[in-house]
Every structure is written in C-alpha cells, then in structure tokens.
Length: 422
Image 1 (spheres, rainbow, N blue to C red):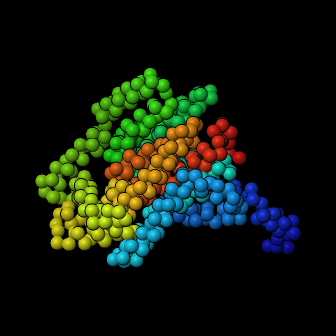
Image 2 (spheres, rainbow, N blue to C red):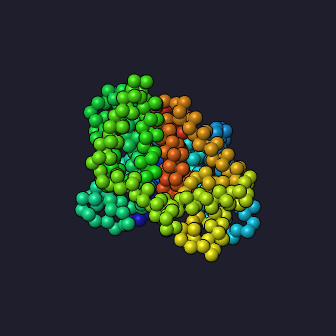
C-alpha cells in the first residue's frame, strides 16, 4: 500500500543503522557541512557541530579515542576547557550568566580531539579541507561582485557576510593552503591543475590588496611567506621566495589605495587617540591592554575567573570619559584574554596547546601537515592584536584545521589517494 514501508526497506534501514561504516561516513558529511557553513553562518556551524558529535556515538571506538587523547595535540585543548570550567568557581564576585558566557568562547576546543579521532579513522580529511576552500571561493566571488557593483548590505564594501577581519583571515588561510597544494601537485606532475590553483590564489590575494583586508592579516602574511619558504625550499629557494614576496609587496603598495589606507589609517587612529582621547580602533587596543595588565596584576596566578573580563571593564569605566570609558569583554589579545581570567595558569595552558600543535605539524611532511602549520602560525600571530582563538569564525577555523590536519597526520594519509572522495 502507498505510504507503508516494506519488509525489505525496513531491513535496509535496520542494517544501515547498525552499519558502523555508514555512521562514520555520515559524521564525515556533517563535518563537510560544518566546513561549508563556517564562512557564511554561525548558527549552522553550531547545529552541524552538535549533530556531528551525536553521529559519533553509534560507531564510537572508545579504545581508539582514549589512545588519541594521550597525544598532546588532543589533550591540551581539553585542558583549556577544563580550566575554564573550574575557573567559574573562583569568579566569586562575577554573576553566573557572565561565567557561563565566558565558557562559550573556549568550549569549541572540545571538538579538536573528536575531529582528530574521526579524521584519523575515516581518512577523509581532504573532503573537509576542500569544502572549506570551495565555500571561501563562493565568498570570494560575492566579494568581487559587491566591489565592482559598489553595493553592500553590511558595513564594509566587498564583505558579503560577517566582517572584514574574519573574511581576511579566511582568505589568507586559503592562499597558503593553495600554495601547499600547488607544491604537492607540481611534484606529482599535475602541472595544469597547479596553474589553475595558482590563479585562484592570485585572485584571493588580489581581493586582500584591492577590495578589503584587515591589518592583522597583512601583518601575518610575511610570517606565512617565510614559513612557506622554510618548509618547501632550500636555502636558495628561501632567498628567492622572500625576494619575490618583497617585490610583490612593493607593487601592491604602489598600486592599491586600499592597502595604503589600511596601513596608514592605523597611525592616524593612534594620533587621534593620543591627542583627543577618542575611541579609535588602534587607540582602544592600547586602552584594553593597559587595563588588562592592571587586572592581571590583581590576580596574577589564577586570574579573576571565567567570564570576569567584561565585569572588570565595566567597573573600571565608572566615572571615566572618552576611550577610557569603553567597555569590552575581549581585550583583543589572546594572551591577555586568558591571563585576565586564568592568570599564569591560563597562559601556560594556551601556549602548551599552541606548542603541541606546532610541533606536531612542523615535524611532519605533506599537505595535511602544511594546513595545520598554517593554522597554528596564523592564529598565533594574529592573536597578538585580536583574541582570535576566542572569536567565533577565527576560532572555529583553528579547530577545524587542527582537527582535520591532525587526524590526517596521525593516520599517515599523505598520498594522492587522500584526495579521493571515498
């Protein structure tokens, strides 16, 4: 009868639900969906992340997961989350809603060991990496369209969704991932495809130069260029790469008013803040840093507790005017962000994670290791001027890249077969 399920169909669904391989594949598909949605949405990322965790349960290999947790790349993120949970207890004069809100920015780190575990057993990490780059390509196309059309529905021309800082981080990451893929393809003899990817990397870079870019992305680029040269070429190659990068930078500076404005405007902001105490972007960072250091001095070892930052800024702003009266829940520096809440203990946990991930990828070869290395260095450098690990898009980019790259490095899947959609 129509609308009924036959015995054969019921048997198929039953076998599928009991099939571990189907659940593993489903988890990979959800991770792909998460990667696709990250450049566009925040709510979709949260939804796919939760459903991803749920799909791990039916085919969960506890023994394999426990072995994975014994690695520094997996347990150091968990240590940070545990510290944040415990840190709510000594935030005694902070309202509980603020404590719970302070837990949110680091909770995403829980997904790193689960992503590492999933990718290590499935070997489909390149599905996820390719999905993110393809999604960024769609953002890239929309950005160029809005730029030439002179139309925007956000505060920034050429930024279709979110903000220019997140977009710049994503585009910078894609550029250097593509450079790593180009090296791999050229060594494998896929010359034509490597040329297409090189052209795509140039289009990404041109967007940063001519459309919109953040100062933190511009600051990070030289470090990533030096890392690329060090990782992929010999001494002569390093010098040639740095020379080409310098020439390209000079040309970009000469022909791009947007690039010159982004850099020089920072000095103008600083002068305005110093002379008039107005809340400019550059001046506010100095205010946030000075206040954060004062808060840290009051509780240097274990900090003021999870979620305490905004409350401390609120109290300090009473009776003040201009830039000094501005309130923030994020001091725009990742080290200070952790130190205010968890003191020296938090800073040690943060740097232990960064070092563990850097050591994992710098000692390995292949595209997956390069992806992870780019993610660590980009996050570390840009976190000098922003709390990017705690921010949503930039933090999830780190989680996704480390989880995928870490899983593939541990699996040892650095062969061309790792590109296949199996």
